[in-house]
Image (cartoon, rainbow, N blue to C red; front, side, top):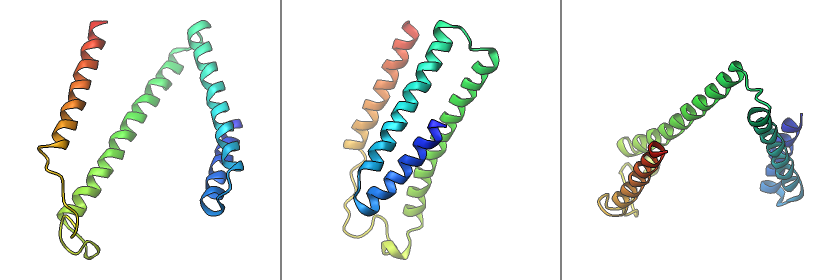
Length: 134
């Protein structure tokens, strides 16, 4: 009940903030949402850690929830890549029929993007190495 109410307050507060530059409902929604999350996770930690109430069905539900979250993230990034490749391989008239659009200078992929990719891969390797060393 508090989760639904906090979601209502948060979305209504966002609408009020976007259209009328009014903050009180947004702050109330954020506060209610934070309070709901705090109480929810406090109960989950208490039940699982101290009371041992996570039955196999609850554990399976938590596992499926994490799997669904990861799948949703994969589809989220797939949508971004789909939009990029759709815009670059079939540019519309809005973009002037060319890619990159006129007036935009693209980055050299062997400079900053390569550095960002190497930092990301290095952090992933070090995290995996640390995880397996535990």
